[in-house]
Image 1 (cartoon, rainbow, N blue to C red):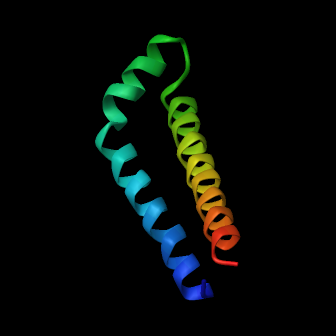
Image 2 (tube, rainbow, N blue to C red; image 1 turned 90 degrees about the vertical axis):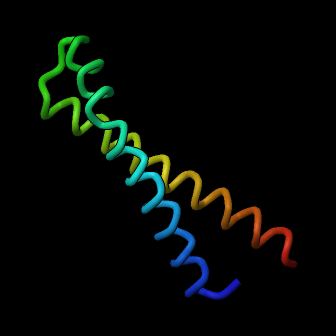
Length: 70
């Protein structure tokens, strides 16, 4: 699998998860704020979860595709 395809895949997964996170941001922020966190901390928590999800999914897909293409 070429480098351009891998980078495009990372971008596509990140875009999709970021779009999803943006659409559900307000209800999730309200829920997290009820737990006692400030709005800034709640936003940081959401961004950290989305960012780590992008990386985990990307690495898993890349690993799966590179293992099966050999």
